[in-house]
Length: 167
Image 1 (cartoon, rainbow, N blue to C red):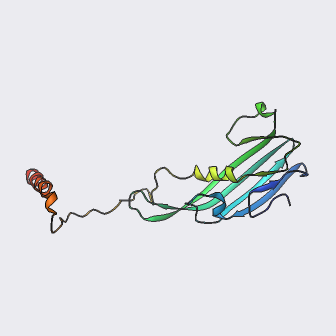
Image 2: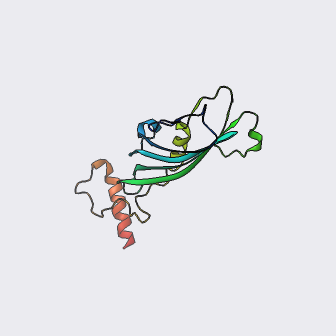
Image 3: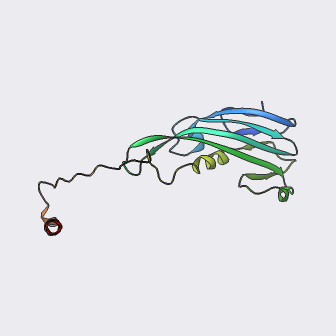
């Protein structure tokens, strides 16, 4: 077997040309993203020729906190990832998609895709974390506190004045 199903290290020395399928179930601690709360399921294939092309589908669940209501929710992630390893000096023929790596054909024995998978999951973290699109947020109450701290009494008077002017 050219890979260990419990980590993201792939042995490339001696692998034959062609397409090789793989499946990895990775513990979330390996990726080091605190929001990942489930096993990371990676299914893919390695195309080996004069270069090595990893095409994979990454699936996991992130545990996030809603920016509006502060409730926790699960955010499923499913993202494709393609990582290309090409011999040094040949990279000018390939577009730089951010996941293009070069290698020395004499010294390459194994590759570790941990950082690439980390980046792919991290880029799926939403900027606005909402439990649902129509989340109303934290409910506000109109009741006034029973007792106002004396240090805030000028503000309380101002609030009362503003409310009376509105009416």
